[in-house]
Length: 99
Image (cartoon, rainbow, N blue to C red; front, side, top):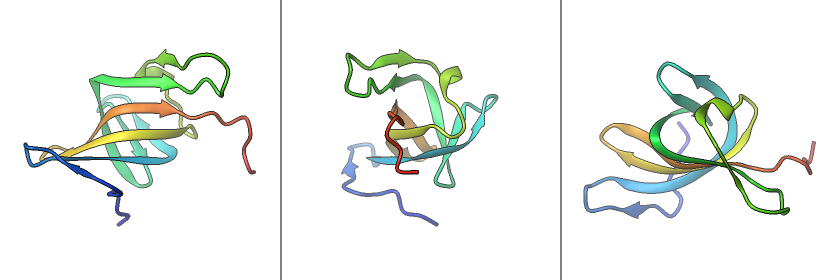
């Protein structure tokens, strides 16, 4: 099992927040989850989703339906008794891929 905690912030509710970057491996439209690095992450109605502007202009707002398997994303996570929940998702620029 991969650890997701790098500089986590402990919240008063006992939950903690962290972030993770990786490629979307799976999307479950009915459960509203994405799988990243083998971990299912719940996307809530309040989750903010943005497309990185790649250094030109401003990031643009996106919806769950805009996420695709293979997208490189950075996710701000909330960890709690209900598992992993996405607070923010940023679809990263892939123009200058290493391979």
